[in-house]
Amino acid sequence: MHKLYRIALTYYSTKQAISKEQPLGLLQRANKPYISSLPPVRTIIAGSERRVTAASMRAFAEEFRLKGGSIEEFVHEGHDHLSPILALTTGSGEDWGEDMVKWVKEGSDG
Image 1: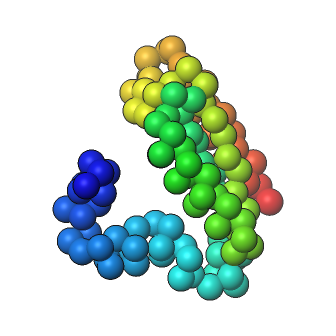
Image 2: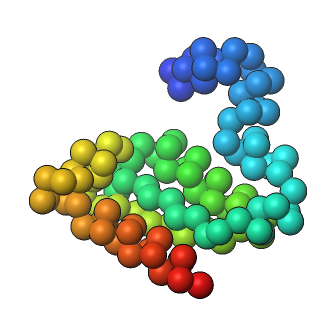
């Protein structure tokens, strides 16, 4: 049994619950009018993210688009999974946070 599957099984309790309740499963069951009514979404994938994590994020983004949602994918080069968050307030590698604030402000102007 794959390590990530074991973790998901521990979190969701059953194989059926994993499929039904994990983010992609929830999105697949959501109706198009609801998804298309949501504000734009941005995903940030670390440049050195594990392939399985990056692939799952891309699959979610593709499904979100198919449901009529607006999503922007951003690859954060030079970071691993947690380092962008840890970089905030350090003065080094926190430009992404400023970019995110600018993106949110621009989105709220329209």
